[in-house]
Length: 122
Image (cartoon, rainbow, N blue to C red):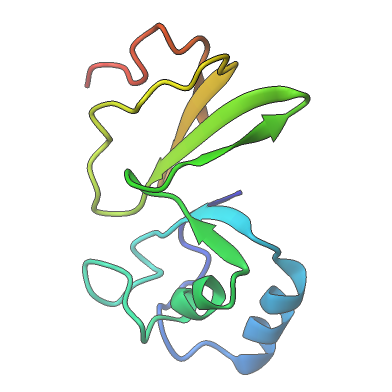
């Protein structure tokens, strides 16, 4: 899981670095940080977009959380990339063991049971 700012500069990164990342990453969950994009949002000319288009990174956002199984328990992990707001809610999934949200410049935050509010009031 990558918490943003994979690159120091959004563009013109060394080709050898991109090749190494393409070989290392495999559908890794990620969010983009402010150093990953030149504009306010990730664009097609940003290096991180190459990794996403190649299927090596899976960006999380309000519309695209990851749902899977960790240690035989169903889990939902959502994310907010740089410049995005926290989701107001998410559709509960039956038998969900945990839900979490990753944000730039912070740790992965888990909430226990889906019957509790998914995100704390800020």
